[in-house]
Length: 361
Picture 1: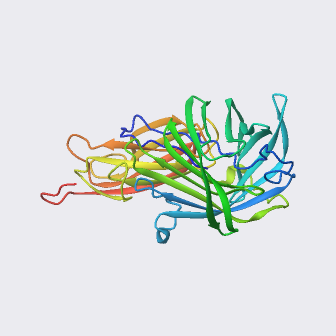
Picture 2: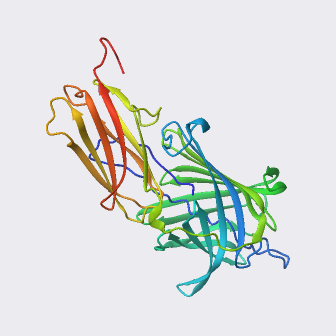
Picture 3: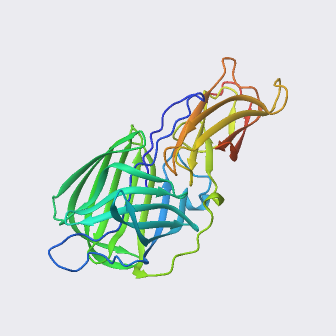
């Protein structure tokens, strides 16, 4: 789901990440003046979406189809699996299914005040309880209504502000709807905007989330569009959580810029941009810079440097940079290897060539 990220200019000794802290509980009943439920809440109720994930200039995901211009498209399913007791509170379990995996389960409560999200379980079933419940929808949804959430996820402080903008006509694959537009902004721990369109009797029909750097560069946009009206459906088949690829990565000459695997000896810095997937909360991420076949470096596969960090969410992501040595890079083949909890996850190769005369990177 949507996550904040800050790109920072770091050397390899300080591998940076920013965690997923937007806690998305897309569906629930909302207290209203009439007896009807705002959305169906029967066990097994299922919402199907088309998801489009588009990286900004700094994060062209290696799993994306180049012909799609850096976009990754996938079907996503939300489903009420049942209820769970957390600290004596009976909460609805909303599972998110993607690629045959349950990426997370949001645990929500519904009362006369609206929707509140109290906890989240990751794909391994590890439960994280929120310091304070996250209010997703305050009832009734009247234009101009505002609310805020100050919370904590792990060690990260989160601040979000929401406003009801009004009603709009919205067309998605499931049809044309008159929807209430909710706009959210996150300021901590990273910049993000959240736009959701809610329809009485159905739920969220469209959701668009953008994460940005401190300089307001677009890092990632994720959109969800409802493909059919919610129905009670069997639970999809679920693969073991450990089957997902944990890390994808790209290289570039800038923290935000075109991905490349070709560099020259006077390149000032080489950046690796990485994206986690289905990481365990507090997974240990290790990055190793290796000189694979480099003249003057012996033996082969010499470790130049390495760094370690801790993931604070299942889809944590970040960057690191290795600065040019004082006398320039040695020409040859290098690679960057990523490990998750000690297990190899991904490797990206690069070649450094001699710089042409008067060449400036």
